[in-house]
Length: 203
Image 1 (tube, one colour):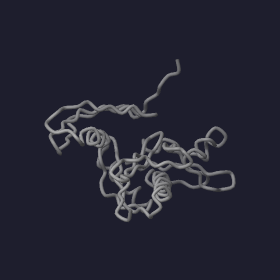
Image 2 (tube, rainbow, N blue to C red):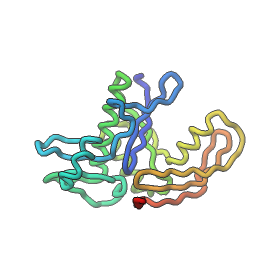
Image 3 (spheres, rainbow, N blue to C red):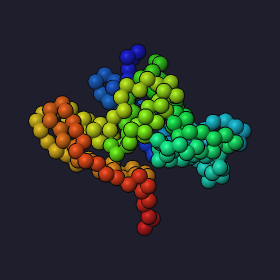
């Protein structure tokens, strides 16, 4: 377990952490919850809240709660959390630290390395901000991996030959589509486009 590298989907709305255990990929849960809301907040007594508790307090204390920080990654904008302001990597690091803690509890061992996925359209600045967030959280970021590449790799682990795939990611706040070409163990994103401010209207 000492060499375990966790995989993290740092999402706009929800995040997840997974690990390879006995040759099988497992999404690691806490209290039966696999997806963790990508929300950070401060309770009225000053406690840091991450995930479901932070999301639950948003209606009552929106000024003490931060959501969708992924949309600000790579920018110079700071966000308020209580009386303090933070950079997007600092807020993201709080989410990553909570996922790191979840992984350590599930695996029963310390975790220090991670692969973090990002949208294929992320700029160099956004990728660097994600890398910085991992370091702040106490993780060695082994690789920043495109989300459609990760999906294509998972799909094609037992397949050989050349193929072209359309990979879409319909998330809680984003919708991304990528054209991916796979040839044996080489995966390349040919084109990618998306909407990172997706609003789904109620019927």
